Length: 217
Length: 217
DNA sequence: TAGATTGTTAATCGATTAACAATC
DNA sequence: TAGATTGTTAATCGATTAACAATC
Image (cartoon, rainbow over all chains, first blue to last red; front, side, top):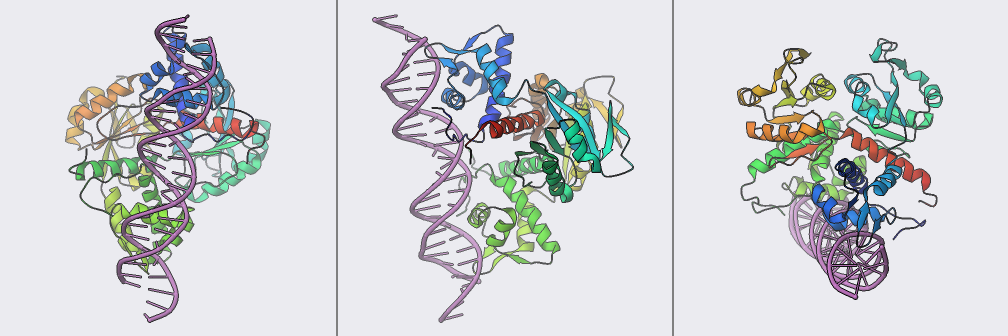
């Protein structure tokens, strides 16, 4: 099914769509131009019906009895995920995370372009944090977001100021936020959380559980 | 319920336990020494029954009619999550992510100690990547993991070599892996994935959906 | 004791998987 | 046409939430 009426899509779908896309690119490289949900699922270690259901939220991309044309599916996923668009990004916070992200070339290749880095510390403002990127003062956020058409704001500041930075970003007019601070951000625009400490904590939890559980299958 | 028999715990529980812990520390700072599931839930914007159920997987920490003693619950969460333990970490890959993590002081404060950084590039080996941390050659992984009692390996290499690095880490004897490469790692020890590009992609997906959906509530 | 709040069972909700008619 | 594989509906599984007896 599909249509203009409200359609709820499970949270995990978008992560899987990215997986499908990456896999399809590989298939294309291998010279394969039609693939079945079975084949795709096998490569990704999931169920064929999951592949079909995930795709069905967005349209009918396959041919019964045949499978999915790799090129056609790639094209559609590119539209759904915004892969061919260029996304201008501003980073707030010129500390370790801010610096690492500014220098992370992998992002550029995927269409994510860091166009500005902000900090409130005058000692950092004006310094070159990455090639061609000078740190700006946070007070210029509004103006720069508009001028440089910033679509995504990345929060790379301590937890205690993260919420207010989020509000400033939203007010400045960004469309989405990626948050590295270990605190849940409340906003009316989409927010994704990346919490490294929390992931490490989940890991130690699992390690402890694994070792202390005797009869666990 | 609780007990020695196999007890399945929902995946999202550990993230929430971390949230509870952080919130309890704040409560302690505020001088509060007893808290109800209702109060805790309100502060975290979840349901009281979720708090109670999550905690019930690990024991009976509250008093009926009273609530939870903050200190007592903190103590227990510290054990469950391994918060007071020191976790020695090795990073594989001395690129941008590796460097950023090596310099990320926030980790140290939480008991995560980077004790070694590895790379296969001779140009990087021997260089000081962070204060007091010289890059080692990957060939010394096995020895160093044993000598320095490394418990966690962080994968900060490109996707195409991530799986083999994971296998090397497991063979060397680490207990868990944190993976920054955009590929799902298969291993028999716990693995947590942190995928920044994928999170950004989910964000662009949500932004596009939000804007193109008219009647959406 | 009366009031409050837990721990746990049962009901609900959401996501995944299986099954199958439609159709290439 | 016969075989294959989709798109979609129905069944299952897993996680959250509500309800309530137990008890501080």
